[in-house]
Length: 414
Ligand SMILES: [Fe+2]
Ligand SMILES: [Fe+2]
Image 1: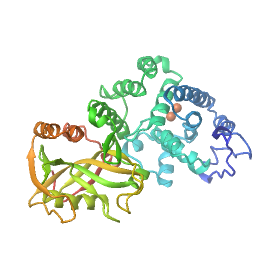
Image 2: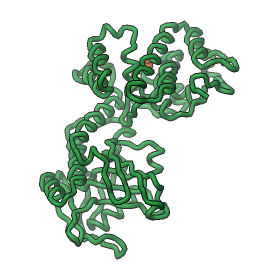
Image 3: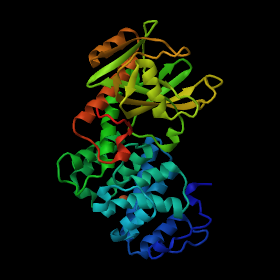
Image 4: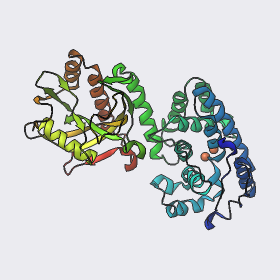
């Protein structure tokens, strides 16, 4: 059945929302219900805006190959929680156990994106994560932004009632015909380019800005931007600083660009090949435990910290998993950079690859060694990790630990 005429069986309005959300009438179309909810609160304008966003989102969905029904639904639903007064949003967000950040305490209106997603999921019963994710970040975007997130964000900005007043909206509209990322870039630079434009800066917006820049850098690395073939495995790299829970569940390998200060650690096998540090997790082994083990085995070192800068979405064409406990045929290989302390020799367990050399080199040397041995994929991989590390040094640190991608921090500082 089409999602647009999907009718929730049972809608139970929690007591604390009964003043704002009317009783759902059995069999009522979802958009009729949303319209009534806005009218009930004297917010006709918000309903007209939501309809405009739905139309714009549908238009963009056709253009960019997104799911049209989810796009329309996202438009209808995204501002539903604005029926809740700002003075109550913080309390409700806490009551519902939503993760919150300081910027939202200061400007509770920002919470309407999370609360609208909560209502869509827990009151109206929508389960499609892309839909909920897009609603949840339609005002600020976030670091793990997907196509529907970008699309709803742009549709929303292009549909503001006073949109023609904002000079950057015209530029966004023009860019949106060519690239959603470019349209978002126009907005973010208008907001963050000069200080003081926004009352508070939500860390998700900074994370989105970072990821969009990282994606642009990544696309300039041809071997990493293209699908990579490792034996029967085809891997697609994606810059990210966090993994969604469904992706975390598929992690079976952890890779690292190991660093000592601002230099890079390289490992060479006994057969002369420079290799990718890290490896496959053992059964039941947590990713950071596995990486600690790999750093000891391959470098004789200790892992001090680890920062995710992306992941490889991998698909194996082999008939069975190459080790029985590995997810198959789809799995995730984490990609991060991190400081290591080299205080021993590679353990080289008998059943693993044998490391002959552990070197500390500059990024230029690392790149040259990988390229001269036909490993452009690893040259680009080290470049990407080095870029992420450089960005972290430039002072554009995030304040929200959820977005930092800091998955592991040992007792010693960098
Ligand atoms: Fe909104
Ligand atoms: Fe909106």
